[in-house]
Amino acid sequence: MLDHPPAINNLAIVHSTRLRFITTGALARQAITDTNVLDALLVAATATAGYRLFQLAKIRRVSAWAVPAIGGATTVSVEFDSDVNGPLAGDGKVHTDTSMGIQPACVHARPASGCLAAMFNQGLAGNILMHLTCPSGTVIDIEVTYRGQYGLGTAVTNALVGATAGAQYMRGLDGLAAASTKLAPVAESVQ
Picture (cartoon, helix red, strand yellow):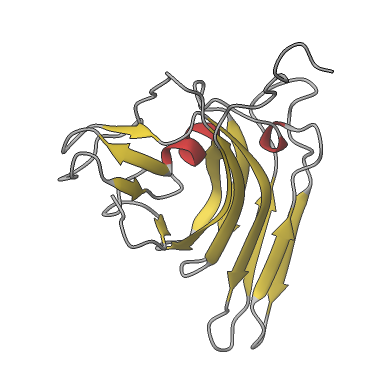
């Protein structure tokens, strides 16, 4: 017989999702930071100020597809490396594929257990989680687990443009607004 209610072990809001982006220009070792991943989903406070929907994020998987131009070849690569020294740095593996025909170049990559990208990050330091290399028009899916913390509101890094207060938006994976991003979100409500 219990003498008190059972403990609650996880009161945080947890959301696992797949975010899709399409590159609007070629990427050459484009750094993706923890700040970028957390700033991708936001809520507007005013027309120019926004806050992250979640305070922690970890990457579960990255997939990329790129079709070569007729008669050419194309390569996509994902590298889970980090600017953090020590055991939390990335695994340094380059996941890559090249296509010379009709089939797209395709990469499905998971960060190694224990590296920075595979752990929950707060996005306060802007640590690099991975680098992406691919041509314009590449479709990139990022599978992410987000976690919210009550009482914490973290402003997004870059100002919003003409947002509606209270509306939720999705940004480019490089942290830039829809008008200037090289990693455009595939969503109805972009900022």
